[in-house]
Image (cartoon, rainbow, N blue to C red):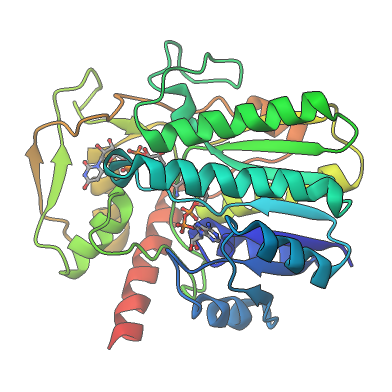
Length: 343
Ligand code: NAD
Ligand code: WQD
C-alpha cells in the first residue's frame, strides 16, 4: 500500500483529499499544526472512510521535527503539501508570518525529500498567480502577474523555488503544481467541510453563515465591474472534485506517467459564475434567502477569472464533474450539520 504524507491534512482541502486517498487504498500520514483547523476533523474522516489516518501535530516550519517524523514513518511514496497560511487580508497585515510559514515549510520539505529518498511532490498553488488574466479562459501558459498580496506572492515564489530546485536536481524530484481556482462545497456526508476561523473571508462560508443567521447580511463587493450583472466572476469548483485531482496526480507520478520532472495544471471547471449568480443559485437549490447588500469593491479583487481546464482534462486525465447546484447544496448541508455539532 503506497504511503502519502499530507501536510495540512486536517484543513479544508487536505481533509477532503485524505478521504479520497483512503478511498483509493492509500495509507495516509497527516502532518498539521492545527493553526487553522481542528483535530475533530479526524473523526469526520473516520466516519466517512472507516479509517482514522495517522496524525502528527507538527509545524512544517520545524525542520528537526519534520526530519524525525520522516524517520518515524519510513518509506513515504509521495507528499501533498497543503500546509500554508491562506488569508489574503491577513497576509497584507502580517507579511513576514506568511513568508516564513509558507516558504520555510516548503523549503524544509524540499530539503528533506532527498534525505529520505522521497521523490514525488504535489504543491498547492492558486489561480491567484495569474492576477487578472489578459485572456480568458486562462491556461497554464498565461503570464504570471505581479502578486496582489504577500499571500499570492508566497505561491508565486513557492512555484519558483520548486522550479529552481528541480532544475538543479532533476533526478531527485518529480513534482506536480496544482493551481486551484475557487474551491467551495463539502463532502456529501456533511461530516467534513470548510471551517473558517472567525469572520469568513471567502464568499461561500459567508453565504452559508448568512443563510443560517450567523451573519445578518452578506456584503457584495461591487456590482460595477465589466461583467453581465456587474459582480465579479470566478471559477467555483467542488472541493471533492479538487480532492480527486490530487489522487490522480499522485497516481500519475507513482506510475511514471509524468512527462516532465515538473508539471503544472489548472484545476477549475472552465465555468465562470458571478457573485450574484452564486447567491441566486444558492437560494434556489436550498430554498433559503441570503440577505445581501451591494457595497463598494474590495481592494485587490480581480474582475473575472475562470480556467481553461483542457490541459488537466486531457493530460492529467481529470475533470471536474459536480454541478454548481450540487456544490451549493453540499455547502448548505455542511453549514446545517455544523449548527447541529455546535449545539
Ligand atoms: P486550510 O487553512 O483549511 O488548510 C491548511 C492547513 O494547513 C490547516 O489545517 C492548517 O492548520 C495547516 N497549517 C498551516 N501552516 C502549517 C504549518 N506551518 N505546519 C503544519 N500545518 C500547517 O486551507 P485550505 O483552503 O485547505 O488550503 C490548502 C492549501 O491550498 C493552501 O496551501 C492554500 O494556500 C491553497 N489554496 C487554497 C484555496 C482556497 O480557496 N481554499 C485556493 C487556492 C489555493
Ligand atoms: C470570491 C468573490 C469577492 C466575500 C481568494 C483568494 C485566493 C484563494 C481563494 C487561497 C469575489 C466576492 C467575497 C464576500 C463578496 N485563496 N465576495 N462578499 O477573492 O476569488 O480568492 O480565495 O488561495 O487566493 O484571493 O475568493 O471567496 O474571497 O471571493 O462579494 O463577503 O466573492 O469580491 O468577487 P477570491 P473569495
